[in-house]
Length: 71
Image (cartoon, rainbow, N blue to C red; front, top):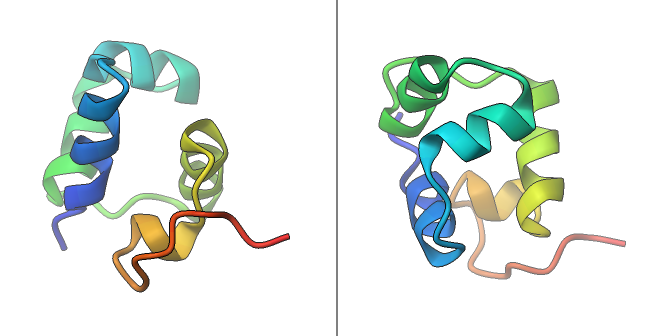
């Protein structure tokens, strides 16, 4: 599964893959695999990424178009 919104959000923030990977405490290459869909992202990292972008996990997974995280 390709996670298109990972790249879209990263580019909206003008962040590099290296920067996001650093925030997740993983290697840039590992993050690249997640972004390209060649590896499934672990739930813990998905939640951290949602917090980083201030969006819901459902938005990241393209299950909704509502960005706002649930309260």
